[in-house]
Length: 88
Image (cartoon, rainbow, N blue to C red; front, side, top):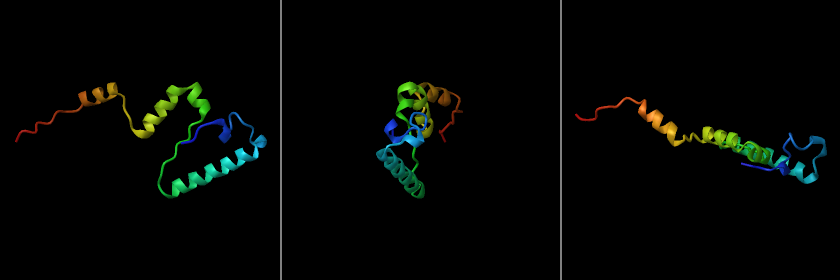
């Protein structure tokens, strides 16, 4: 996971105005993405701007990606399950 405008968030930094370091970082990120894809490793990039401005959306995206449910949702899901009698 990478954060930060230094990695050239296209909503913040003009693609034509990237510094040499930003261009290098962008290439490295592309290589990392390809390597991870080849090896079946999921990558989720989160921009620093999103973390600062909409942290609740970032957390929701992470929960969905990691299949994490909050406690209230777990209770609702368990409540709706049919009970199975395990006595034989």
